[in-house]
Length: 131
Image (cartoon, rainbow, N blue to C red):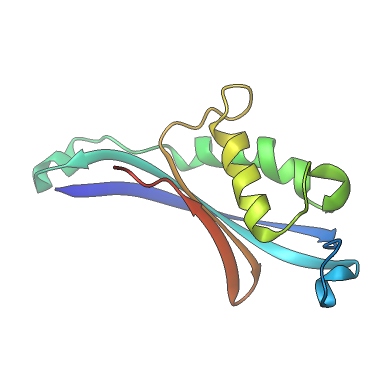
C-alpha cells in the first residue's frame, strides 16, 4: 500500500527574540524562514489507481490557504508581537499546524506535517502520527 502526499514550500521574513534564553537568540534578530506544508491523501493499493485523475490537493488551493492564513500574517513582522507564545521554531510549527487545521482558519484536511526551516541547515517540525 502506498501513502500519497504533496508538499509545498513557502518563504517569509520575520524578526524575533527568545526571552529568558541564555544565548545569541536572546537578542532581537531576523530569519529568512522556509515553511513546508505537507498534506496527505488516500492510500493507494494498485499502481493503476494512481491514474484515475485524483489528486491530494490542488497546489494552487494549498498556496492560497497557506498564504492567507500564515504567510500574510507572519511575513515581515516582529513575531513576539504576533504569536501568543515564545516564538521558537518548535512553537511556530505547532501554531501553524493548529491554525491551518482549525475550522476557524484554514480547515486544511489531511494536514500531515509542518516543517519550518529557521536557517539553511536547521528546522523544526510537527507531524501527525497515524496509529
